[in-house]
Image: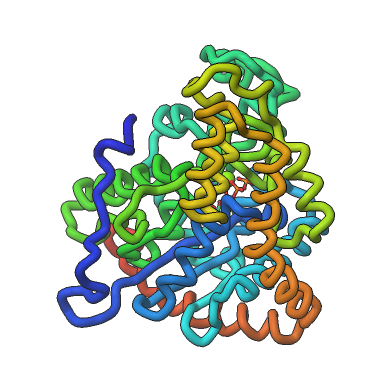
Length: 370
Ligand code: ATP
Ligand code: MG
């Protein structure tokens, strides 16, 4: 499936639905660790920019976290931490509904119902499932070995659980239960979003209803982004160990950047840029602005670049973004009373919307009182 070519684009012209109500925005982040620059530029910064104009609802995806990180203490800590990080990055609890996924039992019930319309083949072909399953099983080859490994080996069952396979169902329900118009996410989630649209369409056509709408990503007219990690490959990810976290202190952040993977440096003018160095340029584009990146790109092209200078500049500009957020995280995160009040209110409001959708879905599917 190639979601990039077919993904519908958000209508930038209006934040209103035809009935005059604000369009609904829904997104979430897994409670699998501290938030990093990938989460910030791929998702959180968009959440903050949308909060004034949309009916926006953001959650902490603790049930999704269980698919790969089932550690009770870490899970609880991470939920609190992410809520504090949402707020520290600028999400205003008076402008958004903020809630914890597991506080909404209607989501779990609708997940069960929606799974009846989802094929295991399409789930097994999902790129993120394959990546995460490969990682859990320690498989390095790209072949279809995962299917064999999963089916054949009893010991592996706990490490690749059914929840990981059905992650796209749960994500579809997260979104469809709100009838969301927009789902601001990073590039890595676009395939899941395509599945959400497919499951919604399938539900509509199976029952002959026009019930679910097709949600789309939102990028302010630009493309979805993938923030690279510091290890020279792949995306920055909470579970990848290659992150700059919003909570990193100055020393830690500088150290990480100075250790980022590079190469031996260009020896001929206008050499192609290797992936690890391109990654640093991509990060620089995000935090430093075009003039700075152009300067270093030019230095690369004429072979005068010194990676040490590039990294120093990069660290400096990253700190300008992260340090103010870090300070606010530290100010908020131990204020349990404040945090729990926010998610309690968020859960109450979300449950009203969710209960309405679940009632409709049960009715449409034929689950009625006798
Ligand atoms: P995990 O490794 O546990 O899956 P994650 O870092 O991938 O964690 P998620 O909770 O899966 O984070 O994703 C939350 C949001 O952040 C999603 O919208 C996702 O697209 C976005 N995101 C995550 N990593 C990146 C990245 N490197 N670049 C852009 N967006 C990203
Ligand atoms: Mg992820």
